[in-house]
Length: 257
Length: 257
Image 1 (cartoon, rainbow over the protein chains, first blue to last red):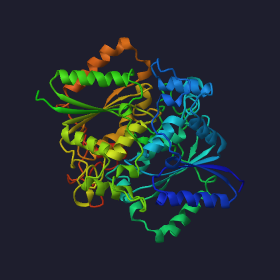
Image 2: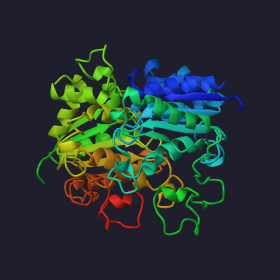
Image 3: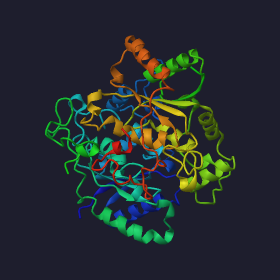
């Protein structure tokens, strides 16, 4: 397999956690295959989650902060906070992104949400192209791959098609579609470990074995077939055209399968 | 109208923002009606978003941090970080919660997600009752009301039933159902302001007028009719029982309308 650049963004407050073990395993395994791996360990880096005026080196405190305007200006004039630029450089460099974290409250841990809020600058991750419409199948991260590797406390049935928390594919849609697919990445089916709290160190070899298969097929697995915005399936109001997924509802209408 | 206790959790880095204006307007309006209002201005408070061992006063660094275990122990033994306890006290005190924030990346700003991650302790917001099943219609915040007041950058059509970002009700489900309904709150239909970036100060009186109606009906509006977990509609595996919403999919199956 050709050697690739892989960027792991990892968020867990405890290095001795299952998430920490999965992150370490991925680094070792991918390096063993000859790939180059970069890790952003957000807790260890002391990543600041909250987006604010400190993100813009030339912010004038007399002015009302309009975050998306300052974001665009700072991105274009190279006056972003250095830690934001560093993460963007890793995203430009990589061939694939792996996000390793627990699911907390049906979403990303705050520190990881704050990585998205801050690193996803305007003109870099959104506001790209005419009307900002180079997204969902297009954009600055087009062609790169993304894998969400997440641990989930409870059992899978509670997240099944009719499970009480809502269907997992749908719960993850704001992340897989809204965060990863938005700037152009090809999003693989997530790698999910349910009942994470009940897993023991003795069980780790089997978990690692299953994960290694996903890592080995990072560049060959079929991505989730989200519909591209520019592919002719949405009308001028960005609604699915008549005749596509008629009579259906829910996020699945934005998939081609 | 009987006088009530209302708790506003507000997250925006710029006090001169539309979100700031809406928060100020709500405080004035509700106080003018005789209610008591508490505000947690997360940016102004310097709220720490990332959940970690500092949340537990008696954490022993020699031990592996298992967040949900430490959370339960600290909640039960009154050894939580004081700022976490303060927020829980406000949630116990209130009759209604208002969350005021912008939608960032189809979700809450990181600082607000970190308020949930940290304040929603085990035994307080989850892990309540037998098997932790006092939730979704039951729980420690049962009977209190919740209103999500959010500003959205783009236009409403892009979030409509067939809009490119996905349907707004579904995008908000991890928040309305997963965060607000989970510990027992009655969740009102969200108050959403689209095209927020295009709104001008001249337009604010009309915006305030519309918002005042929602504030006036905070205790009389019909909540979103989510199905309660304990109401006999889910089976022992917490899946919707046969015969309910058959042949349908998506989050809407968890609503009674």
